[in-house]
Length: 488
Image (cartoon, rainbow, N blue to C red; front, side):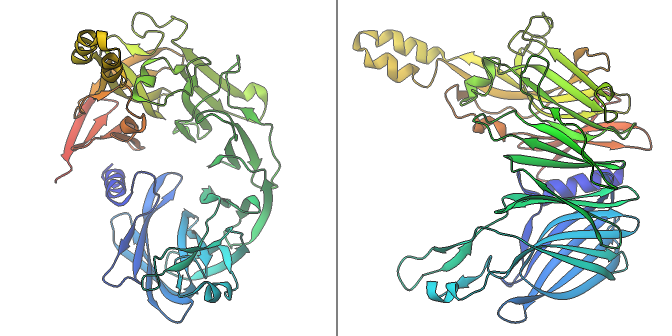
């Protein structure tokens, strides 16, 4: 358990909200370090510290890979020379470490003139590197990619002129281990999307061209590789399908649409393997057909944007092997505990569900921020007093006649039979009130929730990270077992 907590707390320290890695600038601007956890089937086995050292020539750098075990003990070092690299993925299995990079001779490099920049022949590749834990490089593969790079002039005047190439992968590198079999790598560039598999010697097994979508999530499960695709639709949430591939031959399985039986679209809160069966599961919100995808401001969370929650268990490759559980509240079946708009009567607040996970008993937990709503009495009074002026009420009520704030967190439990209940609350720091017309992004990033488990004791934990503290909640015991202030 301590190893899992160390990994999590290091992650909270190292990772930005949307970043998978954190780049730490050293004394020299040319030296930077990226730190990644080494995971095998979601279990922590160590860390990779990837350091770009001094520049060797115009294009190349010296690089150092430091390998550490889960207790941060050094176990190996690799030194090599290459042009600009950015670490994109780490996976481990059968004592082989697979690293994936984006390699470029232009990204991050500045030029004095556009003419000088145009003389550069673009060299952009996705690199997969296979190493032993004692630091021996087994094999390195290189695949050319199209970053759609363009020349950008960032300077004002000649003195501060800075010309560089701007480009990136269309879809980030995702790298997973398939237990006892090899590795799968996914990325998308200007020419399309690719899913590639490798054995432990670094040999490519097969490669699939994938139709471009808005977003992708890669998961390895037993002998299969799964790719969850989000469609390019006008809505922010929902839309998409799941496709599985046999790792041995690349054969694809029938798609699973991300929607309920009535065509309601589904959001994604978690896509992972069940801790007991090892089979994939998906869980999230069911989007309301009338009020869904209309959360432009804080008030949108109180109008019933979601119809309920769901889980999908993929226990095989036929239709009968797919178990779907849909639990609704917008039909009134959850009253009086939950209103048709997702209002929880016991806590007197709306649920903002932002994380979900599976425990060792097959239950699915949804972690939610409590959103309370209150009338802006001053605005109402002001609008009444200024009613004769016509413009007065508009000024007072334009931001909305109500205000909202986040208070504690709810832990909701969806049983294997589909029963949804409020298990407990986690005390969190309350936010300030904001008007309902405030942009919805204001509330989305005030809290972060994570989950982890202890396979030895078969215990599950929720990590609630608010503006002041990190709370560790034991699901099995139903209580907060530790609170860690950020200042410590």
